[in-house]
Length: 153
Image 1 (cartoon, helix red, strand yellow):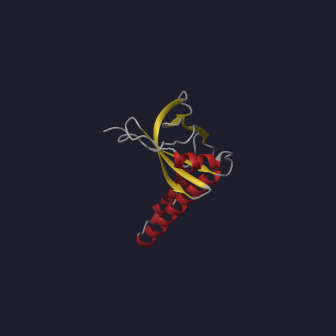
Image 2: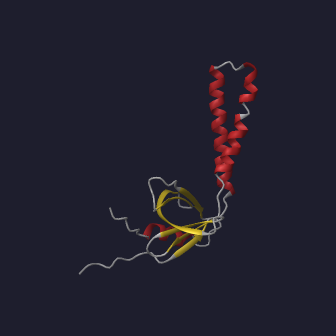
Image 3: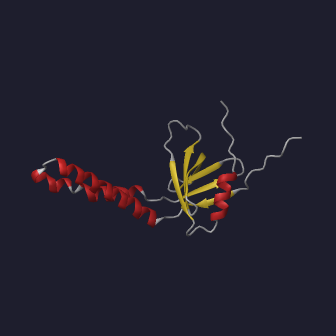
């Protein structure tokens, strides 16, 4: 007798803005740019161009802030596979393969890769935190219990 395969029940969750994460990414980018410029300035004589080079710190901060912005998306498990909805694209839902990258207990980073063409598709990173998520325990349970079927070769 074969044991029955159990799967996680259907589940759906929305990504929420995370200003704390966005601030930390922007600060990390600013400190990285500042550190790199300090190291370069110790070895190079920039003269008049030194002030212009220091404009890279606020540019790096702005790019860090922009790249850490979390767009509204819906992640759904239907019992067989994960689906991701991109807002602003006529709510098109696409099948994705989901991987847990970081799990810090109160914070979770997931990578969703389009199943249609995994080699050429750019992954989508989804950050979730316990703060503000009413279904935090259900999300964590579903992410770890959901067994995705592997594509046939």
